[in-house]
Image (cartoon, rainbow, N blue to C red; front, side, top):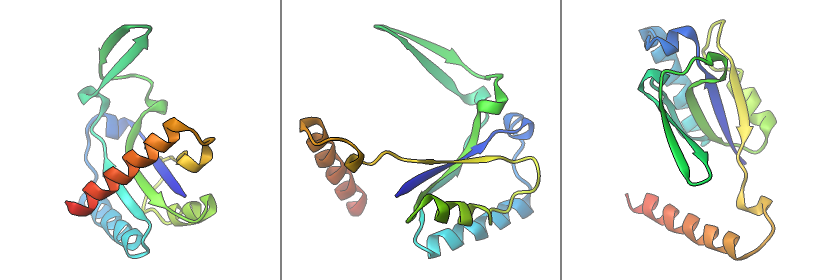
Length: 139
């Protein structure tokens, strides 16, 4: 199963404060362990919402809202995408993340195509998934 681990934003991350060298190094070691275990699919930090935009959809109307956004408890400053056997496995790994106090993470399983009832749209999605995997393999 794939799980996205969301790192909640803090006042420092929203201010654009980059992690100190020690945390960056510790995070590199932790990520290397995830790679060695064959679990890490992707990971990155996100710039603050002052560099972001949101799109709001209302019927045919599209509204662009430029950041920064003030609801900091709902903002994300980084993520991991893991391929694990269970949510419990992901939790055990993420307990080892080298964060100090003041950081909160959320683990959210992805919907997989097998979660949906069979049908033409799912067949097309499977074909697209296969095509994307072929592109990744050739790059």
